[in-house]
Length: 322
Image (cartoon, rainbow, N blue to C red; front, top):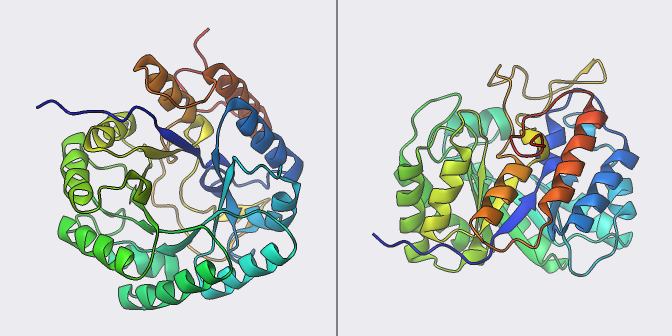
């Protein structure tokens, strides 16, 4: 079968949010701003900044408002934040009133596994959809250009195990029906085989063919991340989440030596819990002659500095090649 790949790929760097949420030390605001500015200089046009969740659950983002105020006011750069409940959405509105730039908001964490939904959001599926419907309208009404949902555990759940793929197709329909502009399709378990990814997205894009309505988010726990991204590209997906050094994962259960209220024990006790690594994905796309607008050599320098900020060696094949 002759599968046509996209000519251009949007690489969404989510180091500042998903990457740092798993860190057990608070990353200083100035360090976060340095990374944001360097990402923009390297050519990234879509950056995820942080979350408006309550700081007792995610103290890593106690500086979210200060961070947003310090970002360059660039019309050509899209800033994303998370606001996963009504109170967080109200904080987005308050931030906009203070003049910050927020272009894209994730306001629905809709895991197809009810066990995962209950553990992470303390809601049933129906409660999550009811709240999301209200929040989508609220965010559109205050001027947010793009409101999106995360549909997670599509291919499996770290708590429950196998989840019916039909539930994911149902959630896609329901998400678009209640007004979401985009869905971030997610494999937090890193369990999907590339063949399953291709089949899933082929069906989804046959019904919703506009690429701007979709992005893919894989935690590369089992080493299949790049292959899964390639399979999604073959099916027509053109936007993908990545982090520097492959960092990220479940919200930290301790920050700066203080236990964090919330999720508790980690799902995975492996070395790699984060996403597909930014430098590796950008380098692969360049080798494939697919446009990204990103300078991979500048990516390598950012990854090296993130290592120094965090004080440890990170996981990147390409940034360490001399």
